Amino acid sequence: MIVTIIGLGLIGGSIAVDLRKTGFATELIGVDNSEKHCEKALQLGLVDQIKPLQQAVKGVDIVLVAVPVDKIAVVLPEVLDLIDPSTSVTDVGSTKHVICQGVDNHPRRGNYVPAHPMSGTENSGPEAAMEGLFKEKICIICDQEQAKPQHLALIEKMYHTIGLDLAYMTSDEQDHSTAHVSHLPHATSFALANAVLDVNDRHIIFDLASGGFQSTVRLAKSSPEMWGPIFMQNKNYVVESLELYIKHLEDFKHSLESDDDEKLMELMRNANRIREVLDGESQELVRLQSTTTKLYRK
Amino acid sequence: MIVTIIGLGLIGGSIAVDLRKTGFATELIGVDNSEKHCEKALQLGLVDQIKPLQQAVKGVDIVLVAVPVDKIAVVLPEVLDLIDPSTSVTDVGSTKHVICQGVDNHPRRGNYVPAHPMSGTENSGPEAAMEGLFKEKICIICDQEQAKPQHLALIEKMYHTIGLDLAYMTSDEQDHSTAHVSHLPHATSFALANAVLDVNDRHIIFDLASGGFQSTVRLAKSSPEMWGPIFMQNKNYVVESLELYIKHLEDFKHSLESDDDEKLMELMRNANRIREVLDGESQELVRLQSTTTKLYRK
Image (tube, rainbow over all chains, first blue to last red; front, side, top):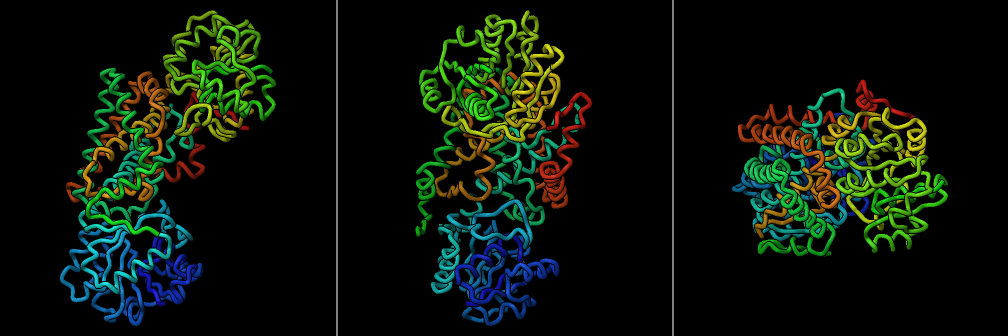
């Protein structure tokens, strides 16, 4: 099977590695605006050849769009304009509503399966590509009824092959939930880094490798070029989640200012429940709570 | 050398493991209010015997206090009342100012070396004890001029033996810096967990294992019994750091609400600088910026 990957960064590159490793793709074609990325991707063997967009999407089985979400909104309609009638198209953007809206009335809308494989690292570029990045992670498939069954089936099979579990929801639901579980933690990490970098009192020691700081701030290393458009496209839900979060921070601060030990303990005990959700079986339950969400289990 | 450890949890237990492994301690005596902890600590071989406080601190070389910081403030003066004149005493509390103040005029103040080995996990209890927890982490030694040189030297040697680098500052400086690099990330994690647990809209999917949520919220699993007293003892600096952090979150939110792409990118690019601080050589530079901070290098 021939797969074309547009955008040879962390996500596109890692998918390429797994598609080759699993034998799902027999040929991989790469497209990227950056010549440096193209060279590196060839050198690392992520793809077999580099082509310009117009040629790269012709006569292939799958086109996967893995560029920042503002670029997806531009490239996706072009791809749908260019492809053969039999080609399946998917994207991996962290937001879905704006992207889906942009091709809502496209004659080839049925060829397109909007997806969000939820995995990543704070690194970017083809060098950051790694094997097994998606193992046992979730891939959200959106508005599946708008894709033709054959295209849906092939794209499901592709994501499934590289280790992802599949969940189904509307693009609006995906943007809402992703705002809370992914975009908010990224926003809080960026703000935490800025706050600590702001303390330029030279009489304090920053042992940033200790004390819990490092894991909390890891996401602040993430690429602004990738995350800026995500935050902007999902602005409403991200602002909503930030407001909720700031309210909880204010509660925490208030319990300290008012010496309210009991309230403070209650806040921390409540937060501790996240352990059950993260470690325990309830994670599965939470996943399945949604009436519109179905989980495809391997 | 005989070492008594008061408090057989994550930190006390992990120090015990390393003190035995390195041969620094030939005998380890444990003290803990919890019978379950005592049994478990004996069973795991963390200590050789359990004794009541009064007996445990007699005729030993070092007493190490590793209970929550509110308990340290109570136990430490008792320990100083009870010890032989030659015994060295230290504690591992994450706050130092209140604890040091409490023994400021104690006749045995010179036997006491206030310390904060900056390492930990989100787990607690003797079962959480692990080898090598302190390797290449920082131990802050406070107000070192108030300890007698022999006691300072022995306690330095002990922390050094288990892999810690030593840094020196006043107890007030330590509380200020620790507020930002440790207490703030814990507070933000607790608040993040509460915010996300608050979204009980059943139409959203929580795939909490993906999307960067897990690392950011890890610290929210931490023990309220340990952290409540830390936050309360360091209330002023923690509130200060929370206010700075909330200001940065508001900036972030405002850049979204006002569609200010440029501002948003600037905020993220600034946050990216944390990568250099965490990964690069500048960490060392930052550490050494303080005029009152000296770093003891192995």
